[in-house]
Image (cartoon, rainbow, N blue to C red; front, side):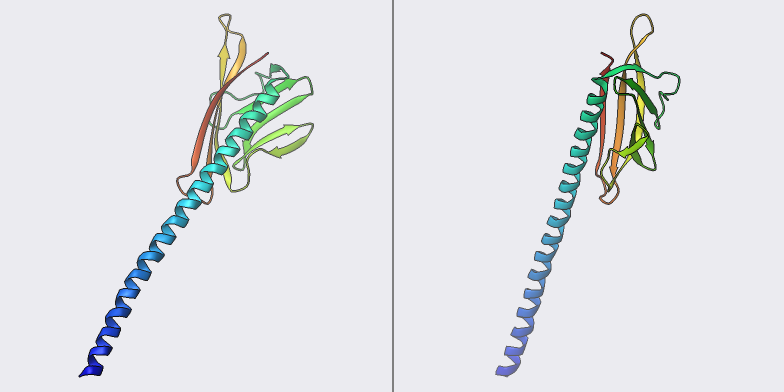
Length: 158
C-alpha cells in the first residue's frame, strides 16, 4: 500500500508541474507576441518620421507643384514637385511609397510595411491659387496584425 500511495503522489506532482509549466509557457508566448507588436509599432513610427522628414526636405526647395500631372483627392494619389534640383515624384506602386528623382526610383518605406493610402489635397489661397498640399499617408505592417499608422501633414510652397 505504501508504494501505491507514492505512485499516486508522483502522478499528482507531475500533473501540478505540467499545469504550472503550461501557465508559464502561455505567459512567455503572450509576452513575446506583445513584444513583436511593440517592435512593429516602433518601426512603423520610424517609417512615418522618415517619410515626413523626406517630404519636408523636398518642400524646402519646391518652386511649383505640377497641378496637371499630379493626382489629387484620391487614395492612390500622385505628387509631382518642381524643385531647384529637378522634378521629384511621389506615388504608391506595389504597396510601396515610391520617390522618383533623376530617373531613379526609391522606396521610402522599409520592407515589412506597405503604403495603402497616399492622398493629396490642394490648399488654395483666396485667389484659388495652389499654395500647398495636405498629404495623408496610411501604412500597414505586412507581418504583424493591428499595426498601422496614418499620418497627415500640410506642406506649403515657399
